[in-house]
Image (cartoon, rainbow, N blue to C red; front, side, top):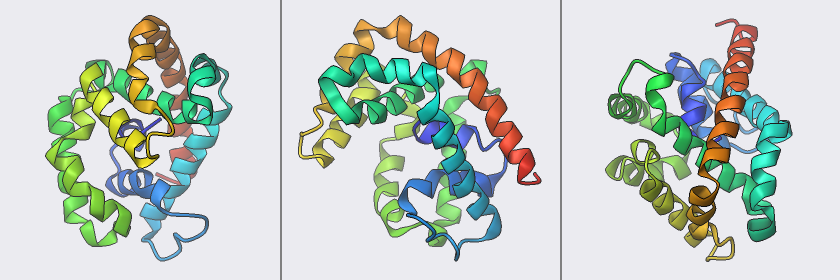
Length: 196
């Protein structure tokens, strides 16, 4: 799962959302200086990643792309799953997706000094192009994949993965829907363990 799913799975706890969002930019044990609840969000993110990587449904989605994209397949599936969350947002939240994304960007801006440098650097572009909202369209996902491909100097060929998204759209959507029901439950249990 990519950014939108991690934020959503933090429920309505702002600090968990921040920690869950920044976790990929915090390596190893380098989260000791963060406030306690943000640390919990980083821990939650890692638990969700482990659950996702081992899940048989996610592996089916990844396997479908593996021959073409190799080890980048898992990254692509994370982004595709965010597409289906954004596209079907009304099934998961009463807050319109646009409003939800704007509220989240404001939360990040209000806590800018806590964010890792890498996140501070890309945040203006994320807000300007409203990445989270634009996940809802195939074109929006195409732009994200293009940007990520350019970061790998086009080695990943991720920018072409919208072809498989369109080709196997129904299958990917069914797999996402089935998996997401399970991870919502898992995340809720993990948050309870953190005493929220």
